Length: 281
Image (cartoon, rainbow, N blue to C red; front, side, top):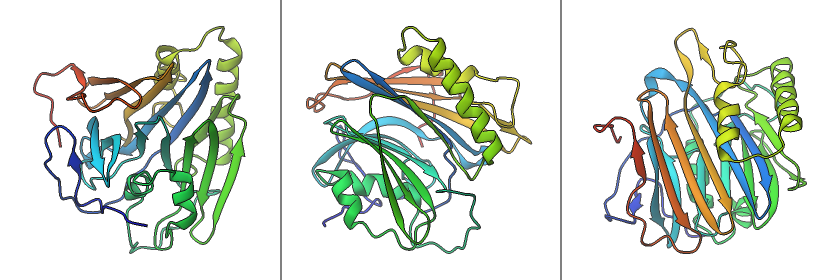
């Protein structure tokens, strides 16, 4: 398997590269919504406030694959990625239960998705990928109409297939205990049952506003002014068109990258709303 290492990130529009070091991140809440002729995947990123601001989603060329993702300011990796076919992966920290970290690790989890998505089939790439020396994680993978959950528990890989016609939500076990997770998933089920029509706007509203007063384990958290929901990222794919939305809560900046699947070459930059002098790390 040939992989372009993440120290070299080639941007489609300019051909420059970024060299970054490895560091630790938290990712926490992911939802999957099936649509007629499409899907929506949405992720709240819970992170140490001091970590820095992630760059909004753009297209990069890695090993011949056109990939779009938000880029972590420190590691150069990502927690949310999609290719020009619409195959999408989202990463959460932890597997089945909260684990005790045993550093040093060989590689940041943020490098996993960009390396897997350099292959024509990310799921086939997972079967050959060397996970040893990587901290426990969960990957939610949408590929060619199949919804899968892949968990690495530090020793073994576990794969589970889900019905792609059913909405689902995941919460990171590193930040939420079993009781918290069950309550959050109950909120999601109740919200799904109350909706007559779901689109990207109302799933974003759910991720941002549900249990807003509960800053410990509501959908948007702020714990002791150290760990907070720093951004939300959502990809809506429908009728072979994609809308890749990202909101940075620290700078209060929104970006939207709209494109046609299999026709991403003309893309130059997302549309940015908010601060005109937004920092790009």
